[in-house]
Amino acid sequence: MSHEEHRAKAPKKFKFAVITVSDTASAGKREDLSGYYIIEELKKVGNENVYYKIVPDEKLAILKAVLEALEKADVVITTGGTGVTRRDVTIEVIRPLFDKELPGFGEIFRLKSFEEIGTAAVLTRATAGIVRDKESKVVFCLPGSLNAVKTGIEIIKREAYHILKHARE
Image (cartoon, rainbow, N blue to C red):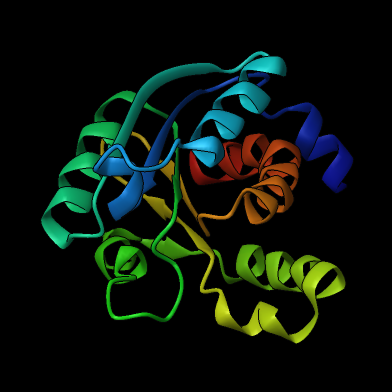
């Protein structure tokens, strides 16, 4: 079966959650443009936002928000905390939840980022994976910058349905 045939059999919409990981946004010192952008873009194509939260770059806050989001959503998207600073711990918190990691997402994201920003793209650790419970869910971890989110959301809008279909087989 071709990838076009697989896409045709994939779900046409999903429930999604957005978690912004940011010390400054969680303290009310910065507006969450990236989180709002994700919500608007996914709603435009017919998906339903069922959870939204801003948390600081702290392990337990991130973990609690992700677990709450997984209870409600088919797709969870985090933005922020994917860099290399001491406070960037999103990947370390979420990766152990993955039953299957999707390294291709991060590779494609970095390739597209390289086309936009050059070799600085090596600093991102954007990733995705499948979390299996009663039903399989997909988690995407994006950087916090609005430009990075714009790059990542285009991949997500194209492939999340297809990933959900296969994850639930």
